[in-house]
Structure formats: C-alpha cells, structure tokens
Image 1 (cartoon, rainbow, N blue to C red):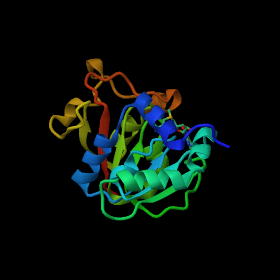
Image 2 (image 1 turned 120 degrees about the vertical axis):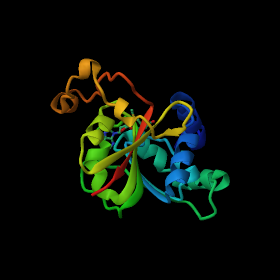
Image 3 (image 1 turned 45 degrees about the vertical axis):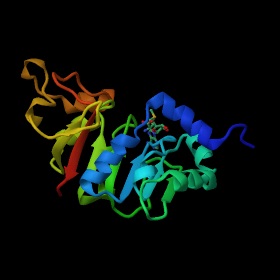
Image 4 (image 1 turned 30 degrees about the vertical axis):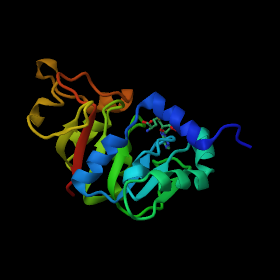
Length: 204
Ligand SMILES: C[S@@+](CC[C@H](N)C(=O)[O-])C[C@H]1O[C@@H](n2cnc3c(N)ncnc32)[C@H](O)[C@@H]1O
C-alpha cells in the first residue's frame, strides 16, 4: 500500500528537477510530435501533458512502483493535458539497452540517463527528433554520429536557437573530442559554449 499519493510524489520530483512542461511543449509544437519514447524517464511524466502517446522506460524500482498506479497517472494527465486526443501512456520497467517492443516514434527524450540516443535511435522515425542534454555525453555522441543532424540548442528560457551551431561542441584550443573517453567516463566534455539541451534530427 502506498503511503503517499502518486501525483504528490510526481510534484515533489518535479520541484526537484524543475518543471519541464514548457520544454516538451515547445519541442512538440515546433516539430509536430505526437509520439515519444522516454528511456530513463524515472517519474518525469510531463511529456504526457503535451504529447498524446508517450512510452516511458526505466528499470529503477521507484519508477516501477510509481507507474503501477497508472490509473491515477492517466486521470491526472487527462485532467491537465493540452491536446484533444485521449492520452496513451505506456511504461516499460526494463533496461532500455535491451530490445524494446515499440513502434518508431517522432521524438526520443534523453535526460541524465546515459547514452539513450545511441541505444534507442532505432526506435526513432527517420526525420524524428532527439532531445538530449550532455550531462552524460549523449549530446556529444549524437553530434558526431552520422545518423543525426544537429538542429539547434535550447537554453534555460526554452527557446530553440538554430544559429551559430558550429560554436557548440568545440573544446578550448580546438582540441579534438575524444569519444572513447566520453563513453568511458559517461560525462560530456567541458566545451567553450554549452546549452541546457540539444536537438538532433535522425537523417538515416
Ligand atoms: C538521473 S535519473 C533521470 C531521470 C529523468 N530522466 C530526469 O531527468 O528527471 C536517471 C534514470 O535513468 C534510469 N536508467 C539509467 N540507465 C537505465 C537503463 N539502462 N535502463 C533503464 N533505465 C535506466 C535510472 O533508473 C534513473 O531513473
């Protein structure tokens, strides 16, 4: 028996990570996203407020327990969502690096959860969008991955900026980025110019 309300738990978590609804709203609107995959989501259900179909994947016990209360989650999303369609929310309590039984989506969300883009890009439609940060180096790996085109960045104000992109992913003294080290350390390098989030389009 849960001793606290599932939505209260979400609100507590949201207070900790910051409300990302605006971030997801802007990306969904700009790229016409109607379906998303969120590997390593923990309990960040904000995407479902602005995207009709979202598949959450996380193997952490706390996340598995949270999503057991799907009825409450769907009720909350239904009462607060910003689209007309009914919400379609799926949770998979598994390792996202394993095979996932999902159809290709319009958007993959990667936030502080490892190399999500690399592990799950096969579930992204060609032309689909990867929204990621570089906390663990996922944006770096995407930037140097021929399957992706670097589209833009988003700062704290959640505005999409798509100019001067060559200024990003540049190391001091123009040193080369060592992808082997990024993979080993699971940490984004200290670039001259950085952003909160990065946007890529899958082009192959
Ligand atoms: C630091 S939390 C970030 C959660 C959420 N994305 C956010 O930004 O608030 C990382 C989450 O990714 C999950 N995670 C990391 N590696 C995973 C994997 N290989 N398979 C499934 N979940 C994973 C962890 O269980 C954890 O819940």
